[in-house]
Image 1 (cartoon, rainbow, N blue to C red):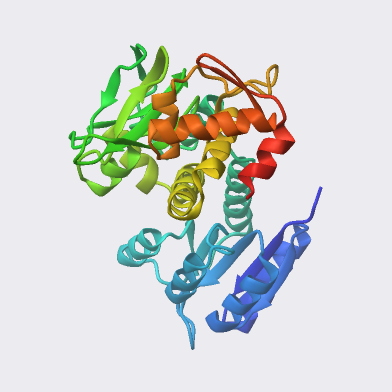
Image 2: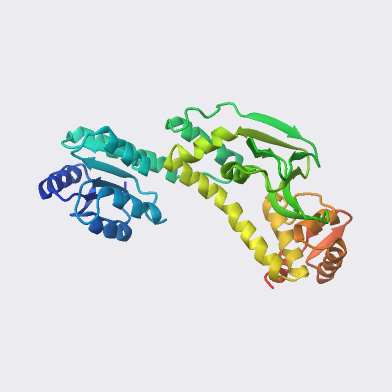
Length: 356
């Protein structure tokens, strides 16, 4: 078992040495800092598993340490436990509101210190295992949130809804009182311009969340969601999502990572639409459909039956241009086309074209 590293930031030399001795006897590797500024430097360099930090210190106090480490992605997830001789309720509240994971009042018992550390490290290990971007991953995230007590108000039984192909889950401009998680099937999101032309903004399969941005921003839906085939979705109330994001730092960090992929995909799509030629965009769209929806048993199938008009909205081009590009790809041998069925015949060739 790998020895855990604890950073102890404490300006009182006696307290620092005595606490470090206790931790070393408990088989922790201990790093010591005599003030907040030095502590931040060590944390950024060593990336300890947990930080014990005094509040009242020269140069940089504990609140400043928490603020600086929280702004750095490399250190933001490190649990921080405050140590202070002040037991006023306002100090406890301020520390926890700023994001501290726990609070110990000096003088503390040896068992109290070790129990607090072991509890935080167990919790950290629990969430460091991560959660896949799948239905199981999202359920595990919510279940673990409930187990740790962070989301006592989270609905245990999430309502489900069945939708048919072409059925609308929500439309652009709708007041979003819930978000949807795809349990089965496939859903596309799109925006429509003043001329009535559609542009697909996302392709969503099992485990994906829909409609979370307007809920977090308190705005109307910024896109429309439509089922691409008969599907089943879970309905998560807005209040549950807000609690999930704000009630617990560990939960929110993992949840944000699950959602960050969607933002990256949309950024890549914007660059693609701005600079990539139609032929290249079609190749990328076909690969994206395969990667998103195809099964391991049929790795070269798109995983969904799709019309030329629907594919054109994904590519962001006119249907006529899409058909010409498909014909070109067919002539290269990269794809095979049989009616609405499109199959990737030569993946490497299609990847070469997609890469430009």
